[in-house]
Image 1 (cartoon, rainbow, N blue to C red):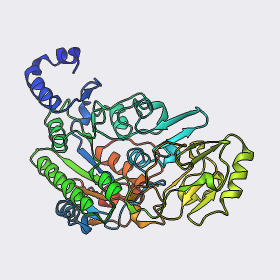
Image 2 (cartoon, rainbow, N blue to C red):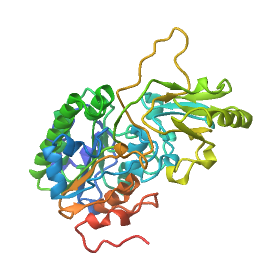
Image 3 (cartoon, rainbow, N blue to C red):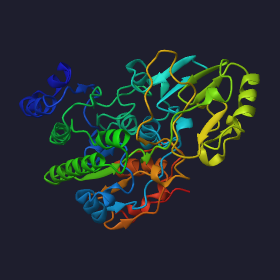
Image 4 (cartoon, helix red, strand yellow):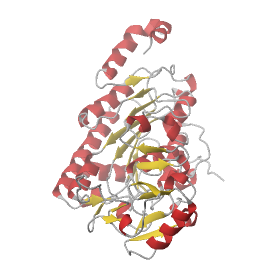
Length: 429
C-alpha cells in the first residue's frame, strides 16, 4: 500500500497495517493502488472463483471427490459438464471464463499462436507476451470490477499479470506453479480478512495439479486419481475457511477443459503438403499468400481421416472460429484425440512422443473435453441442477452476483440466472 494512502487512513493505520502485512507476507503479492472500495461497493457480495485446470466433468464421480460432490449437491452443478470454447485449451478458455467472449473475439485463440498483422508470436509461457495487455481483448472480470470502484485479487489466472483496458487487479502475483497449494488458500482467506475498504470482492485461485497428471499419465491413471483427491481436499479446506468468515462469499469452481487418452504417434502435416510458404505454430498454419493457402487446403483435405481441414472463413459456425487471422488458414480440426503438428523437430533436434493425455478438441463432438462447474454460497439456489452450457455464460453470472454493470458479451445471463437465489433477477432480452 502506498504511503499517501496510509496517510489518508491515519486514523486506522495500525489496524490496516496489521491486516495488510498478514496478507502480503504469505505470498509475493503485487499491490496496485486503485484506492479503497467505493462506498457503494463495500456492501456487495464476494466471489471466489477457483480453476482446477484439466479437471474433466466426470472426475468428481469417477474418483469420489467428496467435497466437490457435496458442494455441488448443496449449491448448483452441471453434472454432465460445462462446454468449453473451441479450442479446448488452457489459455483460451480461462480467458473466455473471465470475459464472456469466444477465443476469436478476445484474441487468445490458442496457447501459442502467430498474429499475421503484428508479425509476432504469442506464447503462454513467455512473460513478454502473456504479460502484455495489447494481446488481450474484452474486459476481464477483475478489470470490470476495478473500473467500477470494486477491488479484485488474482492468485493466478491467464491474463491477470497484464494491464488490460488500462487496469490490473489491485492484488496479483507472478505465476509460480511451485508455490505451495495450501498457502494459496491462506492468502485468499487473508485477503478476505482485510478491512472492508481494502478487501477484494472478486478473487481468482488456480491449481494445475490435475492437468499435469492427466497429461503425463492419462485420465484413467492412479496419478490423476491422486491429483483429483488432492485438489478436492484443497477445495474442501477453502470452503471451510470461507465459512468461518462473517461475509457473504460465493464459491465458484470451474475448469477450463477435460482430458482424453491420446491415440497414435505424431501426425506431421508437412508429410501431406509443402509448408515452406507458411509460418507455423503447433498445428496452426499461416500462409504468406492466398495461393499457398489454397494449395495446402486442396492437398490436406484428401490425405487423412484423422483431421478435417477448412478454409478459415468456412469453418462451421458452431466452432466460433472463423474470423480472426490469428486462427490461421487453412484450419486443421482433429477428428479424434490425435497429436497433430505442422513439423517434427529439425534434423538432430530431440523429439518426444505425444503426452499420454490430451485436449484441445471439439467440445461439442467429444464429451471428454467438458469441464466442471460448481457454485455454492448465499446467492446460489440450493440443489440447482444444470444441463450442459457454454462457458461464455459464466461471466454475466459473476457480474450479476457482484452487482457490476457488464458489457454485452457472447454469453447471456439467461442461461444461468435460474441458479441465483434472488427471484427478482431480470432476464436479458
